Image 1 (tube, rainbow, N blue to C red):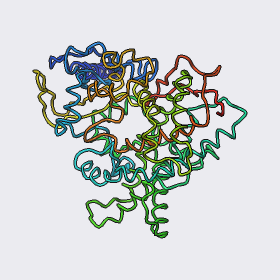
Image 2 (cartoon, rainbow, N blue to C red):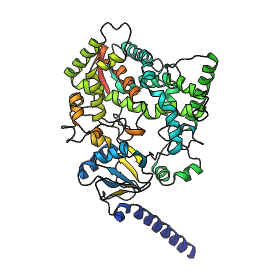
Image 3 (tube, rainbow, N blue to C red):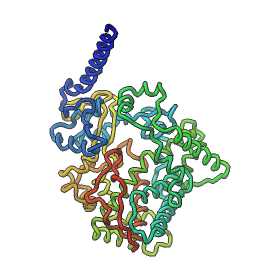
Image 4 (cartoon, rainbow, N blue to C red):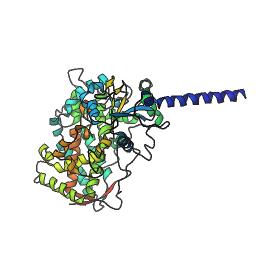
Length: 495
């Protein structure tokens, strides 16, 4: 009996301590006297995320509820206190004006034991500063334009793939653009010729789809609260099989380049390989660092480009007149297209670009940007202060759907991105690629990649809803990047 009593008392003590820790964590903003959304036990303000709700809708709800009451509010990502930025001027200060206070993203990485995490997204501090200074020159416009012929080649393979599927003209669009973007990444970031349109079950595609370890709420708590302990325990974000595959692939391609003596800059991989031979040891990249930068195209670009291209084609399918005007523009620009696309021709596709931007606004792939304060920051023109190690969330999807910035936000209207309308809005009103010192370096390339793919498809095919097309659209709440639930099928007809 004494043993049972002791076990009972021990269990009650542990439960009480656990309860007090949770209550203390969830009272952080109340103790500081900061306006905040009342949290729920364990889940904070993320109740239903991954099930009934997507993170985009949760942040949009908080943004609409508190906007105008304060420059920011407190909220909770499970037990982690977070700052939700509501004011566009504060967002500008965080991302552009006062970036010395917000140098870090605060995303967990463990490069010594998880080499693929040695990428620009997951690095902070001196490691990021060095890596950014080395890699940034790779993404200058002159280098990016050289990759247009390769993009056209991959887009041509996509065109032939659709052509061969006739007369079966009901196509899962998200799978089609996934093959395109996978082949672009494999060719330009890893130096491997894409074959996904011939065989959708390539090893590269399997690894690009299965690199992330099974994730659960307890791991999330652990990584957010005890990142240094996680590093000591050698925690890895990525599956060992995927890490081994990408490292082996990169080393093999580096060896082939070394022996072939190919000296050109027609892919990111070749430019990364040049950095391995840099005479300055501080600028020299190791094999692991090259693999991490190549992998970042999968990590940050694959799902985002899939999302934008899929939703753009979906929206144009619902507006046949707009689609016709876009097609006429593309055909007019590419008339007599003997020499392929070039920078000038892409720039002339104004309406297509406006449609892409409007898609990124209405269906923003990543709902938020993350920043971490590295020293105390007094919010200008207010009584508020952000403390060191406050984690900030800038809800870009909510900003993109703010009716004061974009009237009738649920309406798909590319005219919002005419030159005149863009100039009327706040510079922080459109942030799909971020802005400031930690913006997406590959922004111009990603835009070019999507425009080439969309132009190729819309030039040769018309898209329309079919019986299997979901209207209204249903999002997959289980994924971080905004994506349709299941296959998004459209009827495709050759023009």
